[in-house]
Length: 216
Ligand SMILES: [Zn+2]
Image 1: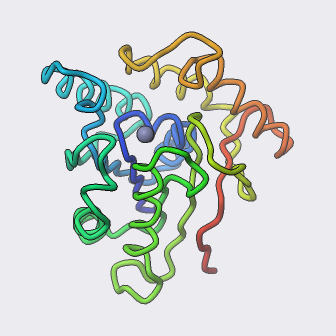
Image 2 (image 1 turned 90 degrees about the horizontal axis):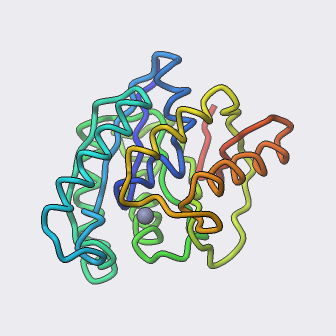
């Protein structure tokens, strides 16, 4: 049994980036914890009630994927650059101490969204190989279906053919975030991306990852 930790900059990144892989881990008996770094609301909505809506959606989505272990750190949405790496790293370190993961998933540097890139940078800090809390741990960087600044170059694939429907079902929990195709946050775009990664990996559906570190 592995302890798996997913760092999500916003509620919904855990589904977009790692939804199928989370479902596969929990199905295999692994313990998956999801840590949501920012509230994902204040930059888009004036309505403070949306915070609870988004949290409830995240809980529902994670439950569909087989986990109830979620932490919300509520740093300011779309302003992680202003928050700064020191503070982001501090909350993520806290999560590393609490969950002591064997495997960490975090967003890749290729993402255009600055919040995602800051969580990537902070992940590099909190997963240093000489830290007691993360000896011989695996780090994998995921893509979300949002814009990229440079191409995402997957070299590690998880076959999610059995789990793509669960991934879509989990994303459906985020009513407020679902858009119509060709928006990247549409069901069709999510399925298409998984199919494209599947074609690269020789499976029907896959999630792709950039390898941060694997120690065997
Ligand atoms: Zn995000």
